[in-house]
Image 1 (tube, helix red, strand yellow):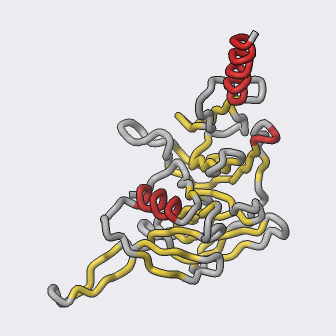
Image 2 (spheres, helix red, strand yellow):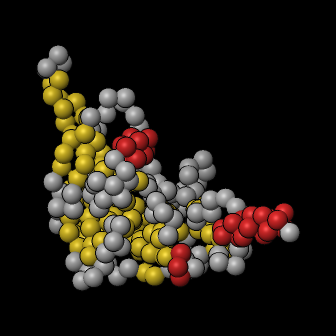
Image 3 (spheres, helix red, strand yellow):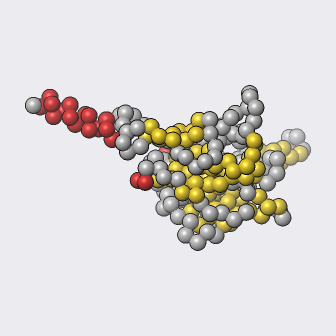
Length: 239
């Protein structure tokens, strides 16, 4: 009887996520797959190819884009990152079996130019703020935020990449990398640099030291964990 009870408990733990391992949603070839409550693998259907998948640190909510207008690149380019002319953002919660809900966003105006290209979505820990990036030059990206309560959209700062911190002493703040022009006295000139910042929703920045010269993905993981939180990047890389 004791052995049977242990076996049943073990099977119960296995059933929590279907396979007894991490079952976070994944993106491949423009399709997002997840493990449903039934334990079966399913696909999220929005009628378009998907991209830029973001999974919250606790894996309870995801955000992603649908490619509304654009053309996929030809091999050997990454098929998960096609050329995009227009996109939409969706949010889906595990509690709702990842039913996708489209976020209503107006076109973004940057430097007098209208854009419907929304990239790299993610959410604040309280699920009230949507963050996303908008490319506005060949090399520049603008970090934006949108209130999911009133729909107000605002520009935060230029950022080449970013993530939202969940938990810990800096929960709700952002880690970002942004291109700057650094003066080098030995060269007597300026050169492009990519320092890392702790950033608030208002755009206030604190420059962070990267003594180990870590890539951004490794830096945000190490830095946020050291301060009791976690920081998930979207499934997209600009570098």
